[in-house]
Image 1 (cartoon, one colour):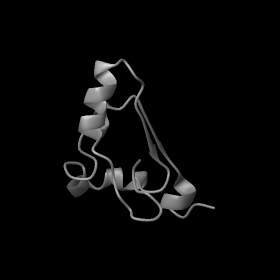
Image 2 (tube, rainbow, N blue to C red):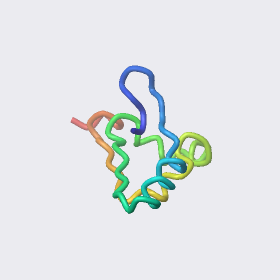
Image 3 (cartoon, rainbow, N blue to C red):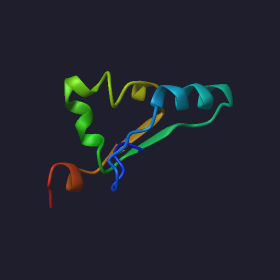
Image 4 (spheres, rainbow, N blue to C red):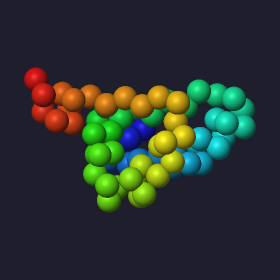
Length: 68
């Protein structure tokens, strides 16, 4: 999960990706709440480290960018 609605926490994508790869499991990151922050360069190596190993990633422009 990329940005939970209660705590704003982010999962350890690199660790999860390693498990998914080991067991041949699809890895999807639900970034509908905090995924829009992936475009901030300073966060790519902290909160989003390992996200490039996911198989799919979603964002929600309505929540992240205030698009109606």
